[in-house]
Image (tube, rainbow, N blue to C red; front, side, top):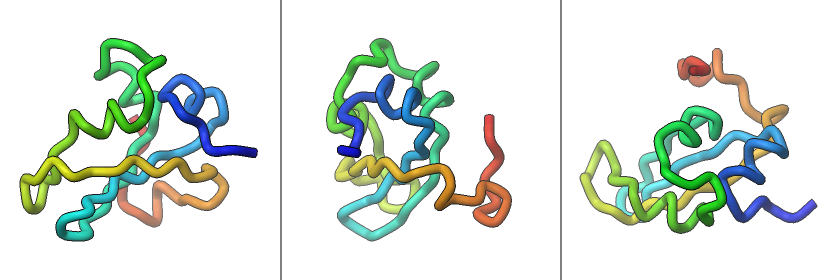
Length: 83
């Protein structure tokens, strides 16, 4: 299966999103359903959604969203709660 290109496709595919800062390497885990409520249009491409992000560590806006199958991610192990 090809990676989903939009936030809606990521939600439908039941995937998780890694937000990865290309400047400093900081990464955070996001539930796409949570992000869907924060952006205007779920049909926006992931690259357009990522352009709205800033890294919480270095404050740069060089973030990439990487879809990952939920089966590969444990929210509990990451210390990240599902919204």
